[in-house]
Length: 507
Image (cartoon, rainbow, N blue to C red; front, side, top):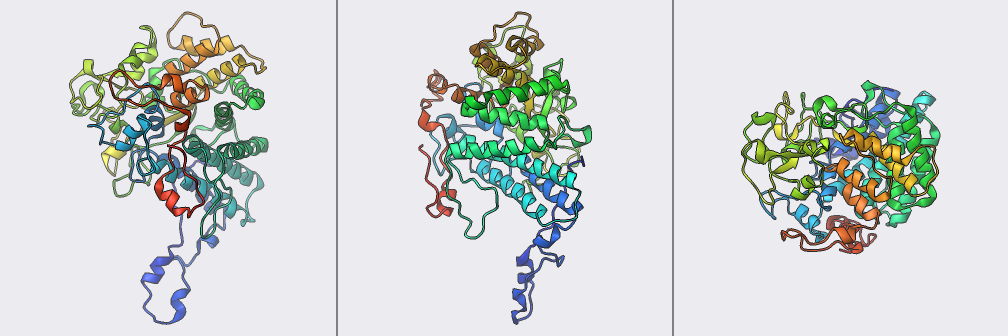
């Protein structure tokens, strides 16, 4: 596999030719890019086709900041659950987050950036299929591999849109003017996602694990994890046996093992560790992201967002932040004293030093992604946007817990649910054995994945959201979650642009 590099694709910027035309003749209608190569003509070689594939990966790193909003997908999921607060300076600071936390998002107050970035990813994946169909001179094995990568990426982008909004436009060929697509139901979108994954997996083109130089590219294990995620979220019991087969194939491959040190997983040296199945790559070294150019290669703003405000640089090895996403006291308290995940997850900043407490402050911050001194070193852009912390998306611990849960729910497999569950439990330094009940497995998932964007979706798919996500004792969350709140309202800008082809979700 060729390493994914951040290559800038050439595009046909027709308006440049128009703006610089000096003749009054009709020749100005014959618009061409400055390179004299139109976009349809550009992808005429394997090397240039690879640029299109790279472009399909690029939107993965836009969700934290890139469309005028802070939308890190792990935090956007978890603020609607019960492990972290929103924080900031108050309810008006990232106000849409506060609306989401209290289940009162509106079409004009919702995280539109995830919608835009998600569909940008879909568009670029579709581009790969379109341009590949016009390219004759390419090795067939390479062609199959790249199309498979684009197919899985498209399924991932759609999964994000599907979980947040449910009833969305779904298409596998880019739209033509006037760019309107009938809305699909959530169930139809689900079937489209699964169909893409089925075809990608059947192609048998992906390695189970990427070589070090290709870390960040789609793999068979990543496709398997995405398949299990959507099937379990849909509660599609007919596909549980297949999802379990995929989980046990990852387990039995022996290419992934639990990292011995839980806290080390989230350090710089823990990126792409032995249990990492898929991460979104960020880089601080020469990171070029800036407030005026946030979509270029570089780091992430997530650590700056979620760290304590006023922290003295270098103190306790941590860095300053903006006070968002404080971890709830109850989250810290749910861990056993011997559980090594507690201190790695809930950094006790109040005990470690001094800072300026902000709204909903608890003293605890998300240690997994907290700003650390030096983690944005050697950047070329703006330091706030160029922390090198990779976003961990799928870990082997989740493979084990998926397999345990599928077995506990009746799917037939070759392994032991108790073994899978207790591998994760024991790695945390706990010596007791847990019975492989669904309740125990879900609680282990909660302990394992705080701040990783799993809890909210687990509560919904297990029908526990309505009884769990209720008004709190602090007066922060005053509304209860109901099934009508399963999907966010579609951004009003998208409703307006759709010219009547989109029906708004309940809100």
